[in-house]
Image (cartoon, rainbow, N blue to C red; front, side, top):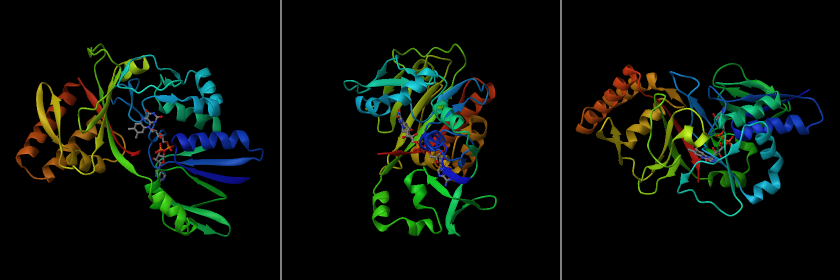
Length: 331
Ligand SMILES: Cc1cc2nc3c(=O)[nH]c(=O)nc-3n(C[C@H](O)[C@H](O)[C@H](O)COP(=O)(O)OP(=O)(O)OC[C@H]3O[C@@H](n4cnc5c(N)ncnc54)[C@H](O)[C@@H]3O)c2cc1C
C-alpha cells in the first residue's frame, strides 16, 4: 500500500487528505504531520485556560464564498453547511467590503472545526509536534526527517506549509525545486500578524453595535472581533495586530484597567518568537516578564513591566485570561 505523507494540518493539508481518500481508488496509507500541538494552522481556534468550552478564532475569522468559488466548489460549502460546521454570518462586521454575490459564513464551533472535519473524513494517521526538517531521496522513496525521532520513508510527500518553511527544508528537496520554481516561491510575500484573544467572565457586556470591526485608523490593529457575537455563542474577544516591517519600534497604546501603556511592538515580537505557537495566559506572563527584564530597565520597559504585572494580577484574580498567536499572513 502506498504511503503518503501530508506535511501540515491546516486547511490545505486537511482538504488534501480528505480528497485523496475520496478520489483515489487504490488503498492509501495517509499520514499527516504537523509541527504544532493541534490542527488548524492559520485557522486556529484557541481555548481559554480556565474553561475549554470557551474558544476564540485566532486566525481566519469568516469564510467568503464568491460567485466564482460557488461555481467551482459549491459541494464543499453544501457539505459544511449540512454538517452545521458553517453557518451564514449574520452579525454586523463594520468596514467589511461586500461584493455583489458574495456570501459570508462563520464556523459556530470555531474555524478549526472545518479542519477537524476534513481530517476525520480522511481517516489519516495524524501526528502533532512533528517538525519536518529534511527530505531526501533514498531508493526511490522519500525519506523525511523531523526534529525528533527517526526518519520515515514515504512514496509521496505533499508539502502544505507556508513558502518560507518549504524553502528552509534541507536535503535533496532543495535540488528537486527548479531555479524557476524557487524564484516563484521566493516572490511570495508575507506580513506578520499577531492575534490576541481575551476571555471575559460570562455575562460581561461589551457595549458595541458590531460583532467585528476592521480598523483603518491605527497603524497596528487591523481587526477586532467580539467572537461570541460573530459566531452567535459564548463569551470572548479577539484582536488582530499586524507587524509593520519598517517600524519595529512603533508603540501600541494598550489600555488596561483604565491606564494606557505604550507597548513596543518589537517587544511583542521578541516575546512571541520566544513562545512561538499558541500558549495560555498562565505561561505567557512569566515569559513576558523574563523577556522585558532581559531587555533592561529603561523607562518604557518599566512601564511594560507594570503592564505585565497588571496582567499577572488579572490572572491571579482569575477575571480575565488571554491567549496569543503569531502568524505569517500572505499578502
Ligand atoms: C490573522 C489571519 C486572518 C485570516 N483571516 C481570514 C479570513 O477571515 N478568511 C479566510 O478565508 N482566510 C483568512 N486567513 C487566511 C487563511 O487562514 C489561510 O489562507 C489558511 O488558513 C491557510 O491554510 P494552509 O493550510 O494553506 O496553511 P496553514 O494554515 O499555515 O497550515 C500549514 C501548517 O503547516 C505546519 N507546518 C509548518 N512548517 C512545518 C514543518 N516544518 N513541519 C511540520 N508542519 C509544519 C503549520 O504548523 C501549519 O499547521 C487569515 C490568515 C491569518 C493569518
